[in-house]
Amino acid sequence: MSEAPSPRGRFFDQLEVGEQFTSQGRTITEADVVHFAGISGDYNPLHIDEAYASGTVFRARIAHGLLVQSVASGLAWQLGLFDGTIAALKEMVIRFQSPVLFGDTVRIELRVAEKDPEPSARRGWVRFDARVANQRGETVIEGSWTTLMHRKTDRRRELTREPASG
Image (tube, rainbow, N blue to C red; front, side, top):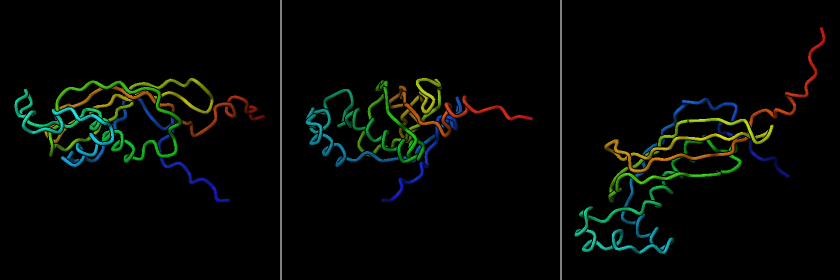
């Protein structure tokens, strides 16, 4: 039996409030939107019908907001921050700010906003402020992610260690 690979991400104890991480960019294509429509079943003409969308306030088809959020989640994973160190994603607060057009390139910025050492000696909550921006630096999505992150060290062991005699 082989051993599980060592975590490469950042543990709860290694994250500092105020620390920021920015992903590489990812261009949203027409194929992305067509595939997402098929997977999700969301065939809103605003996303898939150019004639319809050209008559809207957007003047063109736009990407599904949840597609952009999904891409942002993947970009966050590619940062390596969560690789082997995230126990759970508790909550995502998502506020859509601006449309994403076909050909726009998005990236995500995560900033450690708050840390809560609960709920256990082995894990703690980390809330990240999340901002997705396009190639012009305009915010397209903002919100927050609350994650349960593993600790590098088990606080139970630290709390029960005998003081050194001397």
